[in-house]
Amino acid sequence: MAKKQVDIIVVGAGLTGLTLAYYLKKAGKHVLLLEKNDDVGGVIDSVREDGFIYEKGPTTGVIGSEELVELFENLTGDCAVELTNPVADERWILKDGKWVALPTGLKSAVSTPLFSLKDKFRILGEPWRKKGTDPDESLADLVKRRMGESYLDYAVDPFISGIYAGDPTKLITKYAMPKLYQLEQNYGSFIKGAIRKRKEPKTELQKKVTRKVFSLEGGLRSLIVALKKNIGEENIVCSCRDLKITLDNSDYITQYFKDSEEYKIQSAKVVTTVGGYALPKVLPFVEDEMIEPVAVTKYAKVSQVVAGFKKWEGIPLKAFGGLVPSKENRDILGILFPGSLFKHRNPNGGALLSVFIGGIKKPELIEKSDEELKQIVMKEVASTLQHIGEPDLFKVHRYHHAIPQYDISSEARLKAIKHIEDKYKGLFLAGNICDGIGMADRVKQARALSKKLCK
Image (cartoon, rainbow, N blue to C red; front, side, top):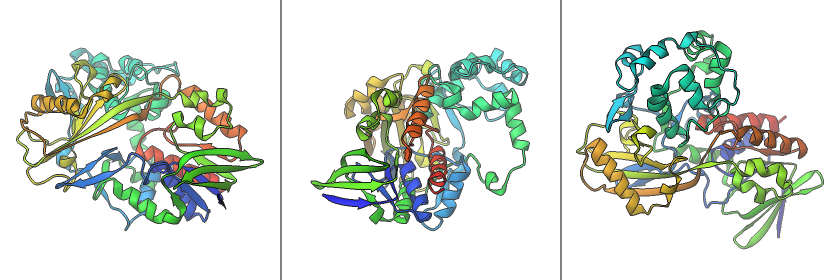
C-alpha cells in the first residue's frame, strides 16, 4: 500500500477541478488531482478525424466572467482563444418547420413572426410592469408575466433547451438564471436593468467580459491540455478506481486503487467536483439524510450527435445554429454549426453539425441505437436544412448525467452543501451542483475556492 501526504486533494479533473488545481499549484500548495477516467477534462474533448475537428462535449463557451478572462490571460502562450465568425452571428429558431432569425434589436423584434402582436406590445411595456415577489417562481411563469406566452414559446423555451436541455416550467429563475432574476429584483425590469448596467462604470477587467461566444484554436481540448501542462503530470493521477474518503481525526484519508495497487493519501483539505449522484460513495462518512438532497440532483440525459459532410448541398449555414421550441414537437433540441463558427473545423465546401437529442422532456431518446439516432438526425437535416445524402463523419456521444437541473429542489441541495461544509471543516463540495453550469461559472467557482483555500 502506497502512502502519501499532501496539502489539498481535488477529486474530479473536469474544468472545475483542473482550474482549481492550477491556481492552488500556482499559489505554492502541494495539490493532488484525482480522476476516475483515463485522462483529464471531463466531458470536454476535441477530436481530429478525417479533415474534421469536432467536440464530444461542450461545443462553445461564453466569455461571461472576469475569472475566465484572467485564466485565458494567465495561459497566454499555451492556448489561444478563438471567437466566432461574425458571419455566423444569427441564432435561428424553428417555427412551422422553417428557420427564423431570433430578433437582435427593436426593429427586428417588431417585424419577427416569432412573437404575437399582443406580446410585441407587451414587451414594449415590460419596463413598467411590477416586479415579482415569489422567490420560487419558475422561469416560465416569470417570462409569461413580463414578456408574454409567445416569447416564452419561441425565445426562452428553445434557449433553455439549448443550455440546460431543460424545462422552463420546472427551472427556478433564482437558481437557474440568477442574473436575470437580479435584473428584475434590483432594477424592476429586464430592459431597465440592462440599460442601467450598461451605463455603470466598469474596470478594465470588467470591460473584457464581452459575453462573446468562444472556442479555442484546435478545439476546447486546448484549454484542458494547457491546464494539465501547468499543473504538472506529477500532481495528477488518472484511472483511480473505487475512490472514497474517510476521516482520521482532523485530517482526511483519500483511498483509491490504480493498476491493482491501493493508495492512501492524507490531507487537511479535500475538494470534490463530482456529480451529486456519486457523492454518497465518495463520502461514506457523511450521514445519509445530510447528503440525500445533493445525491438526488436531477440531471438531463442528452445524446450529442456529430455529423460531418465533406460536400454540403443544403441551405447556407450562416448562423450560430438553430434551436427547436418544444411547441414544434420534434425529436431534436437543436443543431449547432461549428464549421460556420470556427476555422478549420471541416473541409472546404463541407459542413459540421452538432445535434442535441433528448433532454428533460424526452429522456427516453438516449436509449435509441446509433442507427435510430442517425435516422432522426438525417430526417431533420433533410427537412430543415435541405441537405440530402449520407454524412462522411457520424459520431454519437451519450451523457446520462449531462446537465444538473436547477429546479425546486435546488434550495435544499444548496443548504445541504453548506451544512456538510460547516460540519466537516476542510471538506468542500464544488462542481456544477452549485454556482451554475457554464464554463465561465466553473472557472469563477474554482478561482473563488482557490482563494478561500489559500487563506
